[in-house]
Amino acid sequence: MRVFRQKNHGEPGEVDFIYTFGTPGTGSPGLKNMRGPSPCFNGLRTWRTRDGYNDAGAVATSPIGYVHGAMDTESIPLDKSEPVATLCDDATGNNTITEPTTWPRWSLHHVDDYTSHVKMLRNKDDNWGYNISAIAANDSYFLDPFLVSKTLVGTGWGHAGFARFPGGVVLGGGMQVAHLLQKESNLECVITFQGTASVEGWLENMETKAVPFCGLTLEGEHCLGPGACKTEKPRGSFVHYGFKWRLERITQDATWRNYVQPHLQHCSSVSVVGHSLGGAAAELFAACASNAPKEGEYGYDDYESIGWNKGNVRRLRYIRDEREV
Picture 1 (spheres, rainbow, N blue to C red):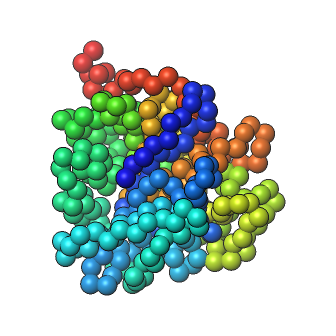
Picture 2 (tube, rainbow, N blue to C red):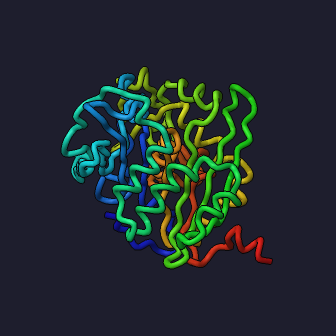
Picture 3 (cartoon, rainbow, N blue to C red):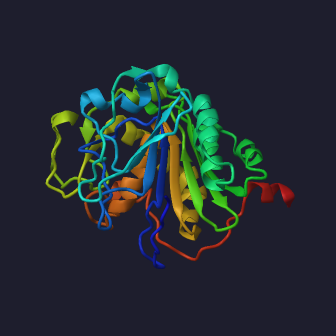
């Protein structure tokens, strides 16, 4: 259930809901909400299962010690039975039931299959769950914002901005895109992050060292390996370097700073969604926003391109509006 906290004008923004598909573990220890009484993020992590196997993307980093972020989970069985839900413990940030197996299968990871199967399990009357299931899985990979805008016709959502990192250098990461959407009826916003879609992106995935990010550790702390990371900061985590690098490429691009970040202050709420590596970027984004280091504090260099303060809620200008002029 999506329950949003009332936020005051001028206070640092935070992610109200995280929705991911087939996302690998991102933190060591696992990422936790740094703001509020509960270490659990308001969100839902989903992955597909069949015959005792899990989507390989969802467990890809588990053998090297990375843990999923603290939130409710839902495994999606392909035998058309009901999803298996587990709740995040508000005291510890752990799930009340452990995942049944870690056997991987890459055939369960395809984004198109998530679109069809997840939408089948969602009630079509649930505008958010039904439409965002498709947006998080499919539209997040579209590089053309006008194409995304076309898919939103009739859904009640508008395309309000996008960022595109051009990539092009093998060691600099592949091309990626993020889209900002707004629901016209209540002015809530969703940011989509793209999953791995290039050779360069897969090379980033293999950069597995554990590093500090956004002040989620104390200054000067180091980790010898993800399975052994510890930090003195309450609820703190080190993060997967390749995933951090991925997020930084898009949020530090001029298109993000011009067409996404300035608009977040005008959203009634902000959710983040993504498939695979896109979900990992969404988790990191949410964790950084929840920590919100101030200027001059450790981690602010990461937060500067992510954070926003709450402003006046209003309808944003949508891409289709530009074509109507």
